[in-house]
Length: 458
Image 1: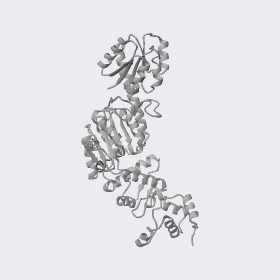
Image 2: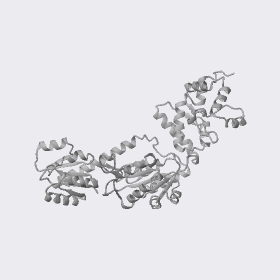
Image 3: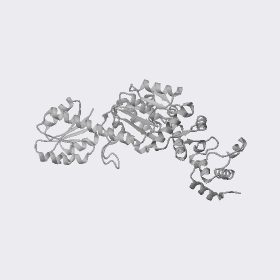
Image 4: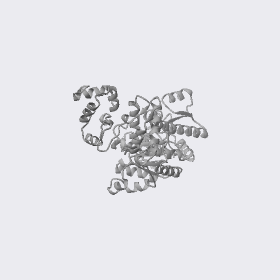
């Protein structure tokens, strides 16, 4: 229910407006002066302020500068063009002269509150778009993903809370977006927040919002992400990172459908659908008293488990080709393709970083490859017992005539590995060596100097 603060020094007008607005399903508070209004606003959040221009003490327009995030309608019995212009210059959202038509006032209020909600949603959407999501759809038809798709379509039309489980990088946020798009809330906002990406001392104010003066630096009222998701969907990724105190406040939101800003004693009604995700073992966290059991039961009404990439069979090649096509477009690159050996290696690889790792590996290979085929020499995989990856500057393969020699080389340090590689391939050009190592010629030159390896070792 939207909240409105009415300020007028005439009791008859205050009471009349309160009855009118409550009749039209608004929650109304009243004040006689600006000083009294400030005290009320400190403890309660409002969607709109309706104030008389001339009041005992400070004028109604003084609230405009103090509360820039709340739209203010100015009322006056001194109807004149000049007073209207002055009020609008100060930042009033609109102006109405007494005596006013009740229907006109209600239509004005509805329009302003709707515009405020859209502005808030658009602001959130811009932040979401700035994240540059690269996945446009769910790819794959392995049995595990078919089950995921089935569960998404089954639960999406309902308002049930959902818990998405799976390893990091498996696409949990993509599932949350798919649920939102197939739900009856798709026309409203989906608010996504990674609980692990926000400092513990900030997560509470970000989620629940805060009132001006609630803490040092709180210079104005700030609606939280839960309020921003009103009417839509709230996705909390890595929910296992929330403190027990924040978990308790979140539980109240789910139980009572109401939220209270930090520093406020008043609550406001919200209508959200919650989707949570985690890679952690929540039942074990409950047992260890790190996660509230009552919140877990509230969240785990319906769960969706995403398989790790290594278990997705033929989907691996489909995903790799999909990401390659997307990145070719993104980088305005000429068309490219994987060699059969690369796709075979992808199929055998254990993918500890799942889909996110695949995207990074493909983008890096695309940058390094100079022709239209991505070969094994262009990819850098984290191999078991031989962690050679992008962290080690792309060195990932070495010429060897026997499997036994390969096994021995796996125990070498990175520098020893490089020395052996350059000596074994001393007849290749610098460009060929750099390409095979997955590094630039400049980096190769720097490594030669550091390790004192001449271009043609004896």
